[in-house]
Length: 391
Ligand code: RFL
Ligand code: PHB
Image 1 (cartoon, helix red, strand yellow):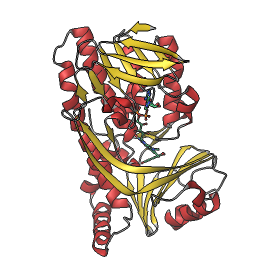
Image 2 (tube, helix red, strand yellow):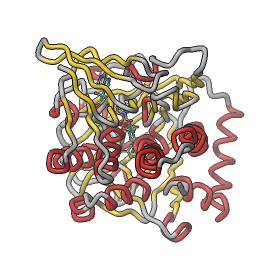
Image 3 (cartoon, protein in one colour):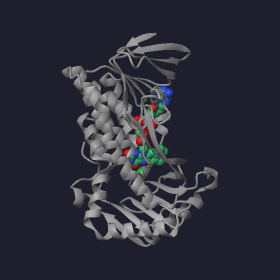
């Protein structure tokens, strides 16, 4: 079967879904092809903290209602080191809050509204491949239920995450990746128990990093730093709760409510940027173009800011015949991407124990935390990055 649309989007994660909705809101035709099933997409437990950039986009689409009803606006978060707790009062320092609302819920809201808004999503599309992206008639092919399909488009948007085919379609002679891989991962646990603290706590402990986060007043999300070769089986629930209680410090640790894990997974940490984010008629957005370690809570938010720039560019192209709109996308998006990369990298260095951390590196962490604890300027810098730099 052959179909034609204005914008073919690969991937129905937050980037692809948001982009599709923003285009449809302007009357631009878009189709999303997604490899996984809807249940699989909704089963991935990932981000939990949304910046204003992301919440503003949902509001602009008129899809923020459930987020405002059920999400938890936060005025601050905490950095812990041993017994010390440094509170970063983001509301006081920047006038802004962040919203604790799970990526799963954002995705669910965007998926639920798709059909009524004429956004077609083709799930379980296998063998998605990009063709003729350097021409002005690019197309993609896929198979579904044993049949081959073609979608011709004016543009293809690669929103297919870090492992998708889009970035790989850009020849190595024109693109380049910049990468840093960290020597540890995060083990996450989701449990239906009240959080140990009303705000997030990022803790640097002798045994390694820990994070106390949440999804609601009755659902907690915790993470600990683990060696890369650890397996889920190495961490039965009891061992994980003991370790969290230790690493989060005496007060929060004592306040942990234990419960059975609803989900447990290990994710490696990586910093990665691919330049440029456009080649011919292919445009990349979100994890397809860059990865940040989750320490700064920036991954989903960067996907949202990319898509804000990208939808503007496509709307400029289709609605105002703006010849430069598409050409300017990559540089505009990358300027913000690199700043989020810097923040995520720096917070990762500050809060984790590296396998070969020497005593000097550790003293640098302590000095940095002392400085942050005593300087409003340092706290403001962290706060303005955490709530998200302006578009
Ligand atoms: P996604 O969400 O990976 O979606 C890509 C979609 O593309 C599909 N796909 C394909 N479709 C068709 N054909 C193919 N060949 C395909 N290959 C892939 C996939 O099935 C998928 O549906 O990328 P997107 O949309 O760019 O969104 C990015 C975010 O998901 C990611 O950056 C965040 O989850 C990162 N992240 C966090 N970000 C935040 O902003 N705040 C946080 O608090 C936060 N915490 C986290 C995180 C990521 C984590 N992990 C597991 C990586 C915590 C963790 C533990
Ligand atoms: C989460 O709740 O999953 C979460 C929160 C903050 C982060 C990373 C993950 O920095």
